[in-house]
Length: 150
Length: 121
Image (cartoon, rainbow over all chains, first blue to last red; front, top):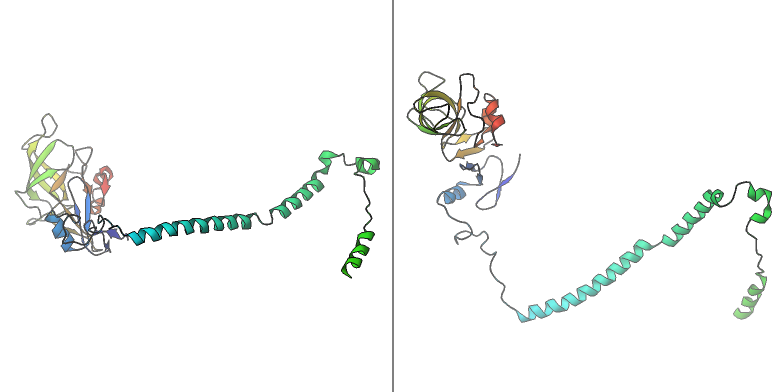
């Protein structure tokens, strides 16, 4: 079942209520109750006629209020600041862990795709094709730190 | 509530403009006809140079009435005027297109009419 809206008062029409009127140009008007239907027959316009509430407040203009305008302007500035902060932190959170992920991916790619760079048997045949290993002495700096702490 | 002497508009392009009801098909002393009933009518006004002429007696199905059509689910439909669609003895329409939104009640007996209609209520 479909819940329609009344053409006259825009309220919901539940099944079993109201009348549907089909005009000669095949336009269908649905009414929620006989009040709306009768007013429609009298050719009343719900917007213009002030006996009905609907849409009467729509075109009332706001009166100028100085304090309201001031507060609004202040609020705009703070809202802009808050928005900037929030967007920055959001971006930061989203980008977290990117570097780690990228490095892991790169490592995997090198492992899997090393055959694109070097022939598979080349490494075992000629050891000079591998990257040279550089040894670094790390014992001295530790002794220095102990001395500094004391 | 259509009865003999009622003038009805024609909702299709068969050539007739206005009909007057003569008799209601159904029972021998049937008082009124509603949406979905077949009536015998005489053509009172017709478009010139069409197959149907004035003062021809034909059959028609009522599709719109100002009297409300009530459904079992509580829906009530009211049209703005009385209108018919002209048919022959078997139930085929004489015209080729229909100019109204028509109620679903006609679907059982007159499926051809419902297939020509722009909107079915």
